[in-house]
Length: 419
Image 1 (cartoon, rainbow, N blue to C red):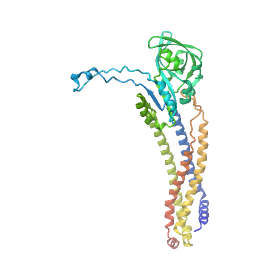
Image 2: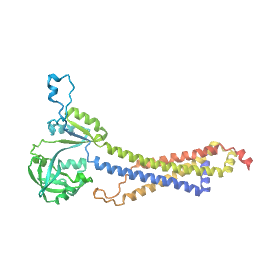
Image 3: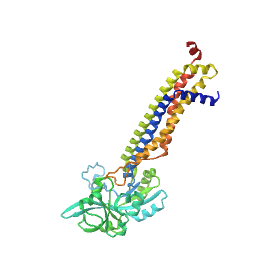
Protein backbone atom coordinates (compact mmCIF):
# COMPACT_ATOMS: atom_id res chain seq x y z
CA UNK A 1 0.00 0.00 0.00
CA UNK A 2 1.14 3.56 -0.64
CA UNK A 3 3.40 4.72 2.20
CA UNK A 4 2.13 8.28 2.07
CA UNK A 5 -1.46 7.03 2.49
CA UNK A 6 -0.46 4.98 5.54
CA UNK A 7 1.21 8.05 7.09
CA UNK A 8 -1.92 10.15 6.44
CA UNK A 9 -4.08 7.54 8.17
CA UNK A 10 -1.67 7.40 11.12
CA UNK A 11 -1.79 11.20 11.42
CA UNK A 12 -5.61 11.13 11.36
CA UNK A 13 -5.69 8.57 14.19
CA UNK A 14 -3.19 10.64 16.17
CA UNK A 15 -5.24 13.82 15.84
CA UNK A 16 -8.48 12.00 16.58
CA UNK A 17 -7.09 11.06 20.02
CA UNK A 18 -4.86 14.09 20.45
CA UNK A 19 -5.20 14.27 24.24
CA UNK A 20 -3.95 10.71 24.71
CA UNK A 21 -1.25 11.38 22.12
CA UNK A 22 -0.17 14.48 24.04
CA UNK A 23 -0.02 12.55 27.32
CA UNK A 24 2.18 9.88 25.72
CA UNK A 25 4.46 12.52 24.16
CA UNK A 26 4.77 14.32 27.49
CA UNK A 27 5.84 11.03 29.11
CA UNK A 28 8.61 10.58 26.54
CA UNK A 29 9.60 14.25 26.82
CA UNK A 30 9.88 14.06 30.60
CA UNK A 31 11.92 10.85 30.41
CA UNK A 32 14.38 12.26 27.87
CA UNK A 33 14.66 15.55 29.78
CA UNK A 34 15.51 13.76 33.02
CA UNK A 35 17.81 11.34 31.19
CA UNK A 36 19.86 14.17 29.64
CA UNK A 37 19.91 16.28 32.81
CA UNK A 38 20.86 13.37 35.06
CA UNK A 39 23.67 12.15 32.83
CA UNK A 40 25.01 15.66 32.21
CA UNK A 41 25.07 16.45 35.92
CA UNK A 42 26.46 13.09 37.09
CA UNK A 43 29.12 13.10 34.37
CA UNK A 44 30.08 16.65 35.30
CA UNK A 45 30.30 15.59 38.93
CA UNK A 46 32.50 12.63 37.99
CA UNK A 47 34.79 14.93 36.02
CA UNK A 48 34.99 17.27 39.00
CA UNK A 49 35.77 14.55 41.54
CA UNK A 50 38.25 12.78 39.27
CA UNK A 51 39.86 16.10 38.42
CA UNK A 52 40.56 16.81 42.08
CA UNK A 53 42.80 13.74 42.15
CA UNK A 54 43.62 12.58 38.63
CA UNK A 55 44.49 16.00 37.23
CA UNK A 56 47.13 16.37 39.93
CA UNK A 57 48.33 12.79 39.73
CA UNK A 58 51.05 11.80 37.26
CA UNK A 59 50.25 9.01 34.83
CA UNK A 60 53.54 7.42 35.87
CA UNK A 61 55.71 8.19 38.88
CA UNK A 62 59.37 7.13 38.90
CA UNK A 63 60.95 6.82 42.35
CA UNK A 64 63.04 4.62 44.64
CA UNK A 65 60.74 2.88 47.08
CA UNK A 66 61.81 2.06 50.63
CA UNK A 67 62.09 -1.74 50.86
CA UNK A 68 63.24 -4.19 53.51
CA UNK A 69 66.71 -5.64 53.00
CA UNK A 70 66.25 -9.28 51.97
CA UNK A 71 69.98 -10.04 51.95
CA UNK A 72 70.40 -10.99 55.61
CA UNK A 73 73.66 -12.41 57.02
CA UNK A 74 72.12 -15.82 57.70
CA UNK A 75 71.53 -16.29 53.98
CA UNK A 76 75.20 -15.77 53.28
CA UNK A 77 76.43 -18.28 55.88
CA UNK A 78 77.29 -21.62 54.22
CA UNK A 79 76.03 -23.70 57.17
CA UNK A 80 72.45 -22.44 56.73
CA UNK A 81 72.09 -22.46 52.95
CA UNK A 82 69.83 -25.52 52.90
CA UNK A 83 67.56 -24.49 55.78
CA UNK A 84 64.42 -22.38 56.04
CA UNK A 85 65.00 -18.95 57.52
CA UNK A 86 62.53 -17.19 59.82
CA UNK A 87 63.68 -13.63 60.39
CA UNK A 88 61.72 -11.00 62.32
CA UNK A 89 62.01 -7.21 62.36
CA UNK A 90 63.84 -6.89 59.07
CA UNK A 91 65.11 -3.36 58.67
CA UNK A 92 64.78 -1.34 55.50
CA UNK A 93 67.59 -1.35 53.03
CA UNK A 94 69.91 1.63 53.16
CA UNK A 95 69.45 2.38 49.47
CA UNK A 96 69.37 5.95 48.28
CA UNK A 97 65.99 7.65 47.80
CA UNK A 98 67.39 9.92 45.10
CA UNK A 99 66.98 8.77 41.51
CA UNK A 100 70.33 7.67 40.13
CA UNK A 101 71.30 9.33 36.85
CA UNK A 102 68.09 11.41 36.82
CA UNK A 103 69.43 13.80 34.15
CA UNK A 104 69.90 10.96 31.65
CA UNK A 105 66.43 9.58 32.39
CA UNK A 106 64.79 12.97 31.82
CA UNK A 107 66.74 13.40 28.58
CA UNK A 108 65.43 10.03 27.39
CA UNK A 109 61.86 10.98 28.35
CA UNK A 110 62.10 14.06 26.11
CA UNK A 111 62.64 11.75 23.13
CA UNK A 112 59.84 9.33 24.02
CA UNK A 113 56.91 10.16 21.71
CA UNK A 114 54.43 8.67 24.18
CA UNK A 115 55.34 11.25 26.83
CA UNK A 116 53.39 14.51 26.92
CA UNK A 117 55.67 15.99 29.56
CA UNK A 118 57.35 15.39 32.90
CA UNK A 119 58.20 17.29 36.05
CA UNK A 120 60.96 16.55 38.61
CA UNK A 121 60.04 16.55 42.28
CA UNK A 122 61.59 16.03 45.69
CA UNK A 123 60.03 16.01 49.13
CA UNK A 124 61.36 17.11 52.50
CA UNK A 125 59.88 16.66 55.96
CA UNK A 126 60.24 19.93 57.87
CA UNK A 127 58.99 21.74 60.96
CA UNK A 128 57.42 25.18 60.69
CA UNK A 129 58.49 27.21 63.71
CA UNK A 130 55.64 29.17 65.31
CA UNK A 131 57.19 30.65 68.45
CA UNK A 132 57.86 27.75 70.82
CA UNK A 133 55.69 25.41 68.76
CA UNK A 134 56.96 23.33 65.86
CA UNK A 135 54.28 22.40 63.31
CA UNK A 136 55.05 19.26 61.33
CA UNK A 137 54.80 19.79 57.59
CA UNK A 138 55.84 18.52 54.20
CA UNK A 139 57.64 20.58 51.59
CA UNK A 140 57.68 19.56 47.93
CA UNK A 141 60.25 20.90 45.53
CA UNK A 142 58.70 21.39 42.10
CA UNK A 143 59.17 23.09 38.77
CA UNK A 144 56.17 25.46 38.93
CA UNK A 145 55.97 25.96 35.15
CA UNK A 146 55.82 22.24 34.35
CA UNK A 147 53.66 21.54 37.40
CA UNK A 148 51.08 24.08 36.23
CA UNK A 149 51.23 22.91 32.62
CA UNK A 150 50.81 19.21 33.40
CA UNK A 151 48.98 19.08 36.73
CA UNK A 152 47.03 22.39 36.89
CA UNK A 153 48.96 23.55 39.95
CA UNK A 154 48.27 27.25 39.33
CA UNK A 155 44.49 26.61 39.39
CA UNK A 156 44.74 25.80 43.10
CA UNK A 157 46.87 28.82 44.01
CA UNK A 158 44.15 31.09 45.41
CA UNK A 159 46.51 33.93 46.32
CA UNK A 160 49.77 34.96 44.71
CA UNK A 161 51.42 33.47 41.64
CA UNK A 162 53.03 30.04 41.33
CA UNK A 163 55.68 31.44 38.94
CA UNK A 164 57.10 33.53 41.81
CA UNK A 165 58.70 30.36 43.20
CA UNK A 166 61.37 30.66 40.51
CA UNK A 167 61.46 34.45 40.40
CA UNK A 168 61.85 35.03 44.16
CA UNK A 169 64.75 33.28 45.87
CA UNK A 170 64.04 31.30 49.05
CA UNK A 171 60.28 31.49 48.54
CA UNK A 172 57.44 29.16 49.48
CA UNK A 173 53.72 28.57 48.80
CA UNK A 174 51.73 27.37 51.81
CA UNK A 175 48.55 25.36 52.05
CA UNK A 176 45.63 27.44 53.29
CA UNK A 177 45.29 25.44 56.50
CA UNK A 178 49.00 25.67 57.24
CA UNK A 179 49.02 29.43 56.53
CA UNK A 180 46.10 29.80 58.93
CA UNK A 181 47.97 28.01 61.69
CA UNK A 182 51.01 30.21 61.18
CA UNK A 183 48.89 33.39 60.76
CA UNK A 184 50.91 34.49 57.75
CA UNK A 185 50.04 36.22 54.49
CA UNK A 186 51.79 36.84 51.19
CA UNK A 187 55.02 38.76 51.83
CA UNK A 188 55.54 37.37 55.34
CA UNK A 189 58.56 35.25 56.26
CA UNK A 190 58.29 31.79 57.82
CA UNK A 191 61.02 29.81 59.51
CA UNK A 192 61.46 26.10 58.83
CA UNK A 193 63.66 23.51 60.50
CA UNK A 194 64.84 20.37 58.74
CA UNK A 195 65.05 16.93 60.34
CA UNK A 196 68.80 17.57 60.74
CA UNK A 197 68.16 20.70 62.80
CA UNK A 198 69.11 23.30 60.19
CA UNK A 199 66.93 26.43 60.02
CA UNK A 200 65.94 28.50 57.00
CA UNK A 201 63.81 31.55 56.43
CA UNK A 202 61.46 31.51 53.44
CA UNK A 203 59.24 34.23 52.00
CA UNK A 204 55.58 33.40 51.41
CA UNK A 205 54.63 34.15 47.79
CA UNK A 206 51.34 32.28 47.55
CA UNK A 207 48.55 30.35 49.23
CA UNK A 208 47.04 27.25 47.66
CA UNK A 209 43.91 25.24 48.43
CA UNK A 210 43.51 21.73 47.06
CA UNK A 211 40.06 20.97 48.48
CA UNK A 212 41.46 18.28 50.82
CA UNK A 213 41.73 19.82 54.29
CA UNK A 214 44.21 17.37 55.79
CA UNK A 215 46.51 17.92 52.82
CA UNK A 216 46.28 21.72 53.02
CA UNK A 217 47.10 21.66 56.75
CA UNK A 218 50.61 20.28 56.23
CA UNK A 219 51.63 20.77 52.60
CA UNK A 220 53.84 23.48 51.13
CA UNK A 221 55.70 24.00 47.85
CA UNK A 222 59.03 25.54 46.92
CA UNK A 223 61.22 25.40 43.84
CA UNK A 224 63.44 22.36 43.28
CA UNK A 225 66.58 24.45 43.87
CA UNK A 226 65.25 25.82 47.17
CA UNK A 227 64.47 22.37 48.58
CA UNK A 228 67.84 21.04 47.42
CA UNK A 229 69.47 23.90 49.30
CA UNK A 230 67.42 23.17 52.43
CA UNK A 231 68.41 19.50 52.32
CA UNK A 232 72.05 20.38 51.56
CA UNK A 233 71.92 18.27 48.40
CA UNK A 234 73.49 18.82 44.96
CA UNK A 235 71.54 20.13 41.96
CA UNK A 236 71.01 16.63 40.53
CA UNK A 237 69.22 15.39 43.67
CA UNK A 238 65.69 14.32 42.59
CA UNK A 239 63.48 11.84 44.47
CA UNK A 240 60.69 11.51 41.88
CA UNK A 241 59.92 12.16 38.23
CA UNK A 242 56.25 12.74 37.42
CA UNK A 243 55.31 11.75 33.88
CA UNK A 244 52.18 12.50 31.88
CA UNK A 245 51.42 10.51 28.72
CA UNK A 246 49.37 11.41 25.67
CA UNK A 247 47.26 8.28 26.30
CA UNK A 248 46.56 7.47 29.96
CA UNK A 249 45.57 3.89 29.02
CA UNK A 250 49.21 3.15 28.21
CA UNK A 251 50.34 3.97 31.75
CA UNK A 252 50.45 0.40 33.22
CA UNK A 253 52.44 -1.03 30.30
CA UNK A 254 54.81 1.94 30.05
CA UNK A 255 55.40 1.89 33.82
CA UNK A 256 56.53 -1.75 33.66
CA UNK A 257 58.79 -0.90 30.73
CA UNK A 258 60.42 1.99 32.62
CA UNK A 259 60.97 -0.23 35.67
CA UNK A 260 63.00 -2.66 33.58
CA UNK A 261 64.86 -0.10 31.49
CA UNK A 262 65.83 2.32 34.28
CA UNK A 263 65.94 -0.21 37.17
CA UNK A 264 63.65 1.98 39.24
CA UNK A 265 60.24 1.75 40.87
CA UNK A 266 57.35 3.00 38.71
CA UNK A 267 53.73 3.46 39.76
CA UNK A 268 50.97 4.03 37.21
CA UNK A 269 47.86 6.15 37.80
CA UNK A 270 45.44 3.23 37.51
CA UNK A 271 47.16 1.39 40.35
CA UNK A 272 47.47 4.51 42.51
CA UNK A 273 43.87 5.68 42.07
CA UNK A 274 41.83 2.58 41.24
CA UNK A 275 39.21 3.45 43.87
CA UNK A 276 38.33 6.71 42.12
CA UNK A 277 37.82 5.00 38.76
CA UNK A 278 35.58 2.44 40.45
CA UNK A 279 33.49 5.20 42.06
CA UNK A 280 33.10 7.03 38.73
CA UNK A 281 32.02 3.84 36.97
CA UNK A 282 29.41 3.08 39.61
CA UNK A 283 27.96 6.61 39.51
CA UNK A 284 27.79 6.50 35.71
CA UNK A 285 26.11 3.09 35.80
CA UNK A 286 23.50 4.36 38.26
CA UNK A 287 22.80 7.39 36.06
CA UNK A 288 22.28 5.28 32.94
CA UNK A 289 20.13 2.80 34.85
CA UNK A 290 17.80 5.50 36.18
CA UNK A 291 17.57 7.24 32.79
CA UNK A 292 16.81 4.04 30.88
CA UNK A 293 14.22 3.06 33.48
CA UNK A 294 12.43 6.36 32.87
CA UNK A 295 12.38 5.67 29.13
CA UNK A 296 11.03 2.16 29.65
CA UNK A 297 8.25 3.51 31.87
CA UNK A 298 7.37 6.00 29.12
CA UNK A 299 7.31 3.09 26.66
CA UNK A 300 4.75 1.27 28.77
CA UNK A 301 2.62 4.43 28.68
CA UNK A 302 2.69 4.42 24.88
CA UNK A 303 1.91 0.70 24.87
CA UNK A 304 -1.19 1.20 27.02
CA UNK A 305 -2.42 4.16 24.95
CA UNK A 306 -2.05 2.24 21.68
CA UNK A 307 -3.83 -0.77 23.16
CA UNK A 308 -6.75 1.47 24.10
CA UNK A 309 -6.69 3.09 20.65
CA UNK A 310 -6.83 -0.31 18.94
CA UNK A 311 -9.75 -1.38 21.12
CA UNK A 312 -11.63 1.81 20.30
CA UNK A 313 -10.76 1.67 16.59
CA UNK A 314 -11.76 -1.92 15.93
CA UNK A 315 -14.37 -0.78 13.42
CA UNK A 316 -11.88 1.42 11.55
CA UNK A 317 -9.32 -1.38 11.43
CA UNK A 318 -11.94 -3.80 10.13
CA UNK A 319 -12.96 -1.34 7.41
CA UNK A 320 -9.33 -0.80 6.40
CA UNK A 321 -8.72 -4.53 6.06
CA UNK A 322 -12.04 -5.04 4.29
CA UNK A 323 -11.13 -2.40 1.69
CA UNK A 324 -7.82 -4.03 0.81
CA UNK A 325 -5.32 -3.00 3.50
CA UNK A 326 -3.14 -5.92 4.54
CA UNK A 327 -2.27 -6.85 8.10
CA UNK A 328 1.23 -5.51 7.46
CA UNK A 329 -0.24 -2.13 6.41
CA UNK A 330 -2.29 -1.94 9.61
CA UNK A 331 0.77 -2.85 11.68
CA UNK A 332 2.84 -0.14 9.98
CA UNK A 333 0.13 2.48 10.71
CA UNK A 334 0.33 1.88 14.46
CA UNK A 335 4.13 1.66 14.41
CA UNK A 336 4.16 5.06 12.66
CA UNK A 337 1.98 6.40 15.46
CA UNK A 338 4.30 5.09 18.18
CA UNK A 339 7.50 6.26 16.49
CA UNK A 340 6.00 9.69 15.81
CA UNK A 341 5.20 10.08 19.50
CA UNK A 342 8.74 8.94 20.39
CA UNK A 343 10.56 11.21 17.94
CA UNK A 344 8.47 14.28 18.74
CA UNK A 345 8.66 13.73 22.51
CA UNK A 346 12.36 12.86 22.25
CA UNK A 347 13.33 16.00 20.32
CA UNK A 348 11.42 18.24 22.72
CA UNK A 349 13.03 16.32 25.61
CA UNK A 350 16.50 16.98 24.20
CA UNK A 351 15.81 20.71 24.06
CA UNK A 352 14.35 20.79 27.56
CA UNK A 353 17.19 18.60 28.86
CA UNK A 354 19.76 21.00 27.43
CA UNK A 355 17.89 23.97 28.86
CA UNK A 356 17.60 22.41 32.31
CA UNK A 357 21.30 21.44 32.26
CA UNK A 358 22.25 24.99 31.27
CA UNK A 359 20.11 26.32 34.12
CA UNK A 360 21.83 24.05 36.66
CA UNK A 361 25.17 25.14 35.21
CA UNK A 362 24.39 28.72 36.25
CA UNK A 363 23.42 27.92 39.85
CA UNK A 364 26.16 29.18 42.23
CA UNK A 365 28.13 26.47 43.99
CA UNK A 366 30.37 28.04 46.58
CA UNK A 367 32.26 25.90 49.06
CA UNK A 368 35.49 26.68 50.95
CA UNK A 369 36.93 23.26 50.07
CA UNK A 370 36.65 23.87 46.31
CA UNK A 371 37.57 27.50 45.67
CA UNK A 372 38.01 27.05 41.90
CA UNK A 373 34.45 25.75 41.41
CA UNK A 374 31.86 28.53 41.03
CA UNK A 375 28.80 26.69 39.64
CA UNK A 376 27.45 23.14 39.62
CA UNK A 377 29.40 20.95 37.16
CA UNK A 378 27.67 19.97 33.90
CA UNK A 379 29.06 17.90 31.04
CA UNK A 380 27.52 18.76 27.63
CA UNK A 381 28.78 15.62 25.90
CA UNK A 382 26.91 15.14 22.55
CA UNK A 383 27.03 11.40 23.21
CA UNK A 384 24.30 11.76 25.86
CA UNK A 385 21.96 13.42 23.37
CA UNK A 386 22.60 10.75 20.74
CA UNK A 387 21.94 7.97 23.26
CA UNK A 388 18.76 9.73 24.41
CA UNK A 389 17.18 10.10 20.95
CA UNK A 390 18.24 6.62 19.77
CA UNK A 391 16.93 4.92 22.90
CA UNK A 392 13.73 6.98 22.66
CA UNK A 393 13.20 5.67 19.12
CA UNK A 394 13.93 2.06 20.11
CA UNK A 395 11.70 2.15 23.20
CA UNK A 396 8.71 3.67 21.41
CA UNK A 397 9.16 1.36 18.42
CA UNK A 398 8.85 -1.76 20.56
CA UNK A 399 6.10 -0.15 22.63
CA UNK A 400 4.12 0.23 19.39
CA UNK A 401 5.16 -3.04 17.77
CA UNK A 402 3.23 -5.34 20.12
CA UNK A 403 -0.13 -3.49 19.85
CA UNK A 404 0.44 -3.07 16.09
CA UNK A 405 0.99 -6.80 15.74
CA UNK A 406 -2.26 -7.40 17.59
CA UNK A 407 -4.10 -4.98 15.29
CA UNK A 408 -2.70 -6.67 12.17
CA UNK A 409 -4.29 -9.98 13.21
CA UNK A 410 -7.82 -8.62 13.64
CA UNK A 411 -10.31 -10.50 11.44
CA UNK A 412 -12.62 -7.90 9.78
CA UNK A 413 -15.36 -10.52 9.26
CA UNK A 414 -15.59 -11.20 12.98
CA UNK A 415 -15.77 -7.47 13.80
CA UNK A 416 -18.38 -6.64 11.17
CA UNK A 417 -20.47 -9.70 12.02
CA UNK A 418 -20.41 -8.69 15.68
CA UNK A 419 -21.75 -5.29 14.77
